[in-house]
Image: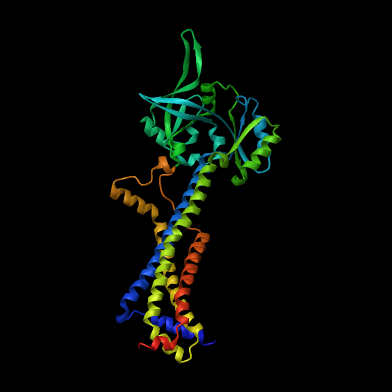
Length: 417
């Protein structure tokens, strides 16, 4: 038994060496390695894209969206300062900011778009979001009450053909009663900059103004639409905001980022599971190549196996020989696939941009995928899962031909030699 494995390894290594009289077997061995490598690389890249998409989407959402919000049930919250102070002192809450928000129409020239107008206090807004990092041409501090400046999402500004310095008109949903009937309440704002968050849903719909200007436009008086909360642990948003609302006395509508955007992440998790199962078929095909390679090798080496058996080599050594050979094919293919997958994933954005320039098309449409690039992030757990699966399939695929070789009868094999 002590010499069985070293001897099996020497035999396996000898059979793996390409020879002039076994070129076809060497070729299909390389095909088996290539199949495993392709399967591992494809799985790693696909899972990496899913991970990167999920992580990037999560980061961009949390940089511009509220971790949680508390809004009034029956209109604006009037006496909101004591509520904000109480919420700020609640466990798990790191910052609180008031806001005024409503849907409106925005027009520039003959172009009209529906927008979500959000009134903020720039100094306080910085404590609950990182939106100031995405402002172009100016800063949040430029939203001075009374000057009626507005920051437009990048895509929204492009749709309106508006640039800094241009005037836009915002029509509030509440009308004004006049002798001629109810007419829309209009206010002219000046575009002072744009917001490029990289999140299409935000950049295409949101316009930021000073909170006092929004209050005048939407006639909320001293009241606010609600409070935006930044939490120590964003993933505990649901439980924290619920506890804060109860401590404030109830009578509020609460929401959090996991409720508003949870469908995105659930769909990503489901897609990852489905893609993993489907792409296992690629590695299954590679495993069949290993089975075919070893089966043909066993058939070709029947006389060698018979001679080894007559010399006293036990069946377990013959079995180990072909198991080791198939395992080496699987290991080499797995390592090559891991290297290729990591290389492709780390340069995926550049590869996609190159293909878009070459094909003169858009492969990653932000209106569909919510992001304007294709990030990839390979995790250690994915590497272990993919590589482990590839190696296990490779080992299992060696067992049928190896068992056939171990059962070879010397007399039968040498009868026609």
